[in-house]
View: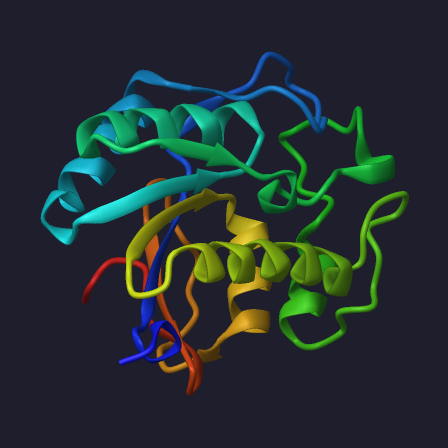
Length: 197
């Protein structure tokens, strides 16, 4: 059986709960809370029997911290990729976090209006393309293996459906929740989204 016929399984996780240094929207910051650290450790523990070969993650601190804690439980290495980062806040930088200026844009992306741009930021299509490029890199690097990929809610919500056909309903991911994707010569499919019902 060739490597192309051996499916790669990507377990794509949203980072653990984070706290931010500022009450204003920005593209930087966000360190795991005590709960977020427990979520990251539990993520690793939940995958212990899956023979995870490697952990890949966004370069944002909350994702790196989640990946490092999970990887420590799993005894594997971590690789970061800029393409897995969350979408940028653009011109919404400095808006109070109590407001969510992204709801309308994100809902539009989910409804297929992917060429809509966050003012001063990326379009949904650009986000999906960069996330998908990294997911393909990961699958190519690990034929026949299972890997953990730690990213962010918005990036996962756009990138996974762009890379794989959804065989399950797409729902909002909580911190530490996972999505499962298989990739092989037949194509890509998302077989689980969030916690099992």
